[in-house]
Length: 187
Image 1: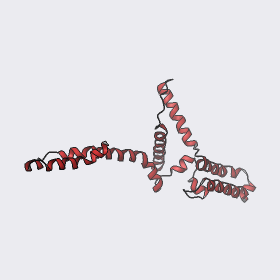
Image 2: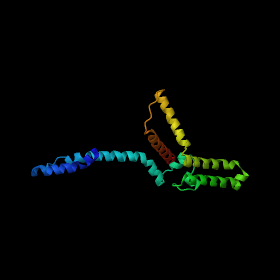
Image 3: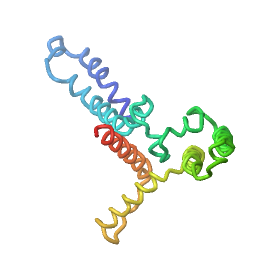
Image 4: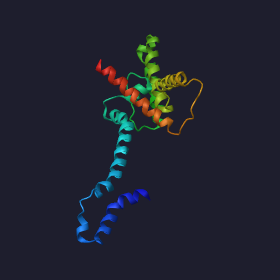
């Protein structure tokens, strides 16, 4: 109700002013500013919050950073590694993993030297775990480091978790990855 009233304040003001005397119609006050200021503040806060939380995902989607490879812990994007699209189903992810692993193990290099296959198979497994199960060693490590830091600062006292902690933590992790990628690209 309050948002609807905020939207219609200019209409209410104009309709009331129509009933007033002619000189009162243009009193040169800042009535319009006062009407629109709350809306402008709400929209600005919404844009700021969305900008802070969604910027890493936009940078990833545009291709400026590769969050998926950092999250999966692979040297290449896990979608590229498995040869699938971003909208692939879990069955397609599983089939692509099995096919790629089978191709790799049956290759001549792996038949000659099994040690050469360990690293590529490990990369495929990390990509599969990230895409199929949503598991990320990098994210778990980040959460552990953050929890250790909180314990050192707060001692034994642990604060209650809010429902937004997971969302906030994922956003923090994305920014952490963007920051790390920027650092490495600057060097």
